[in-house]
Image (cartoon, rainbow, N blue to C red; front, side, top):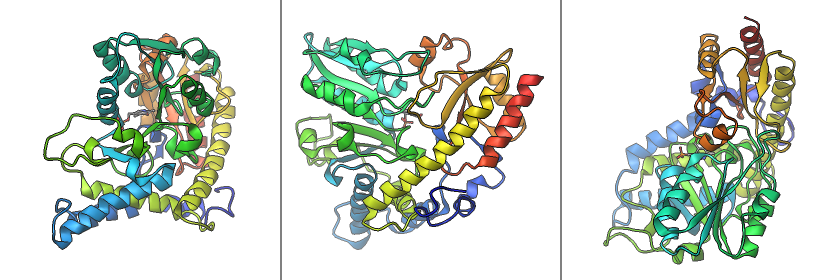
Length: 408
Ligand SMILES: Cc1ncc(COP(=O)(O)O)c(C=O)c1O
């Protein structure tokens, strides 16, 4: 049952029934790699392919519809994470957008400059910066997380952020071990020396309320396919900041912000799905106020639901002999990486799949993190990730299966 019931208008069983993909899917604990979508999103995408395939800015009705589809998706994203619609840049996924922005930002870097990345991050918020830094002559400084605790403390930035820092790239939540660093404090430190901040919100966005301004994120990047929407990435930034950048683009394409960052024709049907996913999330509550307020309320309730499932899972795993958890961060998402003694992560994932339970194994592109754990060359870890549509019985089945594998 979802708690608090007074925020969400329908019980979890009804919400689950809105995900056609859950039928016959067994126990889906792979949400951190991509969530299922509710039927409302599938329908919005299908409807858009019927009516909204024309390109934007034409003088006829179908084109006007596409123009509105894009504008509406920008408004939806700004309601979801904060910021202004005029600062929402869409692209194929977070990785592509981050490489694109790294190109644009690094045009101003030189040998005197430094860029800070962290070992907690997904490689999509590391490699675009290390490659761009190398090309421009800037130095890379690493803020290291602590593999024992799984924390990325503010002190990790004290030694590496300074007058030369141009950009600090940090995740709002680890897609491997769930750690939620104190992003507001980190961005404050960065801003104090005049550096920009690039926050990876891919893993954080589906797990609780987000406010890009409160986070101090000059750029906030995420992907809607991790939050019940289609395969699209978005970066949210202040329009004035985007105006200062000159990304590579074709000459006839609009030079306006944010369009100048978007290459080629956008996937209109998927953008319709983005709006539908945001509307669907907002529709989980009839709490008063506009869509932004309803999203904050719904995501707050979702976070509470997820915290309940997380503590159930962690307590259960702690009781199973031979299970080792990676890290034990205090503030975290319900995403758990673990090992079972005597088994490779691939073995465990296969045995769980045989029991109808979907989990990922490997490094999940948290490559530097797995290296710090000494696991990058050894198959990484098993990752179980819990999202909105999981329930207590999913966790019970998962715990029973893990206990069974550990006993064999
Ligand atoms: C935390 C995190 N950052 C970045 C990415 C990359 O996102 P995308 O697949 O949209 O490029 C992922 C994908 O798994 C992720 O989990």
